[in-house]
Image (cartoon, rainbow, N blue to C red; front, side):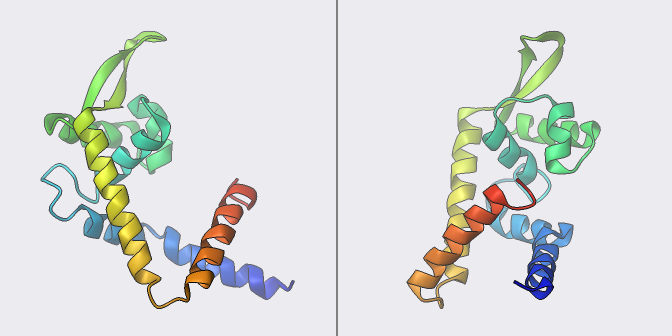
Length: 147
């Protein structure tokens, strides 16, 4: 394998990981989901779905914001009934952000929209190539440099 393969992958990841690329995708996925669910709050919802209840400070590195940025977005989600705050049983001074049942439903809808969007973008690929790509991407994510 040549260094060119690594560079090709690095270039592709650079495009995918750009903040603007993610924000554009999040904006497309959240269209029509209500005022509180947009490209700014999507990462907070998604991260809470992946990790479970977390404090704003603990969630901040996962979403690329500081604690106050997470808190502002969580407040919007809380006002919409998608997130609630609960006292942290390990630290009575702290609060955890928790998805509500309505928040769980919103995340399920967003995940369905994302899967549909990905499938649509692969529609011109032969099915076996798309399946191979999915398998290799999963392996790269689990075993590669981000593991």
